Image 1 (cartoon, helix red, strand yellow):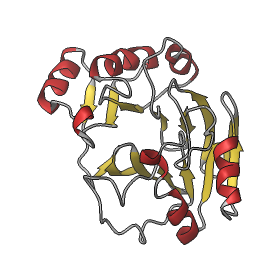
Image 2 (cartoon, helix red, strand yellow):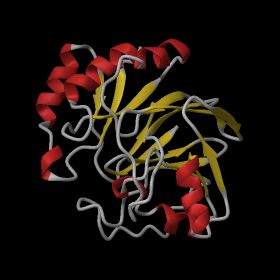
Image 3 (cartoon, rainbow, N blue to C red):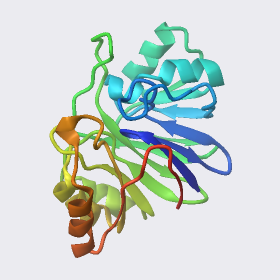
Length: 226
């Protein structure tokens, strides 16, 4: 499975049966701005919630690639009202079998509104089971005890977890989350984009090492094989 990190919480996940793009905020991201998004052509776009730093490029990429937008019902209907023809609405606790595998929408504790102020439904995370790997993208969230339910239900190979603090979990809570999720591999996200969520990379790695967690802090544009 190949991953490409585009900054903030945006990852492209290349599977044998599909390419998935999660939370595209690229062209106006201060750390990746002016990147050409016209050559990003996913089959599916997953949106965890409505904030602009997770949705900014979703419409443009969906129009260019004809990707299907998957998100909560409120967000998918918002994109439908803008003329996006292929969407799949879900809600917390629901799952669906897509060509690439089973996707389950799980809880996240965070706010959600669209860039124009419209109601963005409930924030969410996703667990994706594929023939290659099973992984969890937490979206923007705090640490919450029901993460144990995810760890009990799924055999996770790795988890994308926010580590930037202030708006989401910080590194300490992310490491505690890994324990409940029963995974020893974290791919960090939602960090360094703005001054308020800048992290000390060396200190984060030291804390993870002390708990025997493999913490991957990706660089923007970096391709990873997991």
